[in-house]
Length: 274
Image (cartoon, rainbow, N blue to C red; front, side, top):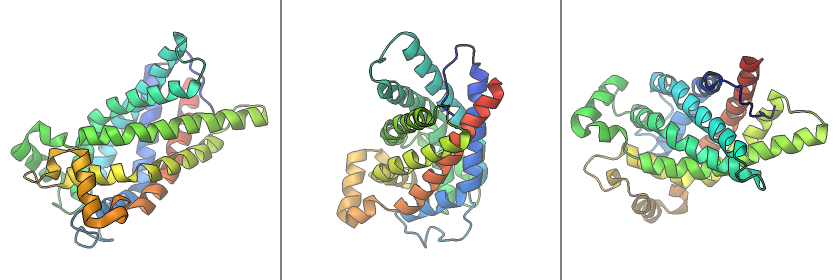
């Protein structure tokens, strides 16, 4: 259903609903994420593990999914509430959703990026232990190593959210008006799948660049995190195909994940507020 922003809604409920939604997606669709990472790896799909061990790094992902999703939705909903309360952007509501999503992504990436760095190196077969990878990064690169690719990740997530969330909110509003009542969680899920799939396809080159930066050797040019340089390098080496590596599992993962994530979020928040 479409969520009405109530000033009495507890921040704890936003955190809990977001955490539940995040864990539901990461636990259920992790193999697709692994295949996407290996297709985007500079070492190639087969050398990075192929179809073997598709649950490598699941523990890290599950550990980080709840706080990441909770941070996003807590920031998203409260920014949206603040903007509406102060009468900002009341003429064109999608701007409220885009602005709220941008703030949400910046906050969520504080947790998401370290998790992604460790998880993707585990998925690409750097080592059989996420703990070893974590310690190795701290030893060789320090805390900064865990945040390699932060800027690129934010630059990927903000346009993704600019596409996904206004579409999601807009489709829910349209559907709600057509049927004369708020949408149900399953209808919210369909809206989430459509909006997420489109956003995933459009932002795939940014996702490929983010993966290359996170997996790059610390002495390489890619490790410097310069988005334009990495995108240019991928294009010259592999063309358009390289920029859209892993698009099929990415779109599948985020379409299905968007259905689960946003549907579960709406359902969990409704239940917690009842």
